[in-house]
Image (cartoon, one colour):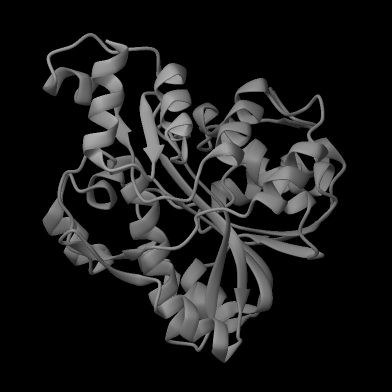
Length: 325
């Protein structure tokens, strides 16, 4: 018996990832501020995510899994939690091609790429999508050939590889949606352990489709990637206000760091940069404060505890490190 949020579940030899607790917390908070009534938990496994959506975000949920054993586990857990909802045993691509949904949670093993075209077809105008990827190697540049095959993107290993993973995934989601004259507005995107999680709204508005298409381009030989914002602070602030005792402190900390994160592309790693200068790393907060005093924007990165996000040129950042060493 596992207790998570307001839910209590049995795993019954069905896959359950305890390390995904933080992404589930944040997804619950995200849905709690979204004006959608119904959500599809497309790859539900034990049903933990969808059950929490019902109990904590007050949404109607359709549960789907291709594994008949998982479907039986979902039914047991729905009864255990007093939650009602349609339970399906279908191939997710076929389901998404056949039906329209106003909110879709897609949390596959590995890459979501094989499911994004059917998701793009299914999601309605002003709908909500929440997409997970755990194949961080092709997304972050560790496996450039896989990046080209799965995401049609040229990548390479960069210092800010965790943020790169987010931007590659958003770029590919935008591409998939654009085939159906739709576009994606990222609201909350984050990298946590081996999870890349992207959540936002979908619009079928020609002017927005055109605007967002212009925000996908090459960046220093990498791409195409998403060059726009990866979060909406109005939404993040509302999520933080909705947090209850069922949300673990680590989830709140991640959201607070994301909230204060500036909208620049990439980050510098404090230890890596200090090593190139042959100095001991100064305190990160002192680095950020001095950059701000020099008139630059600067913040932590939610994706990298040692990350320095700033609009300052690299030489200015090095000068600050040397001054504080």
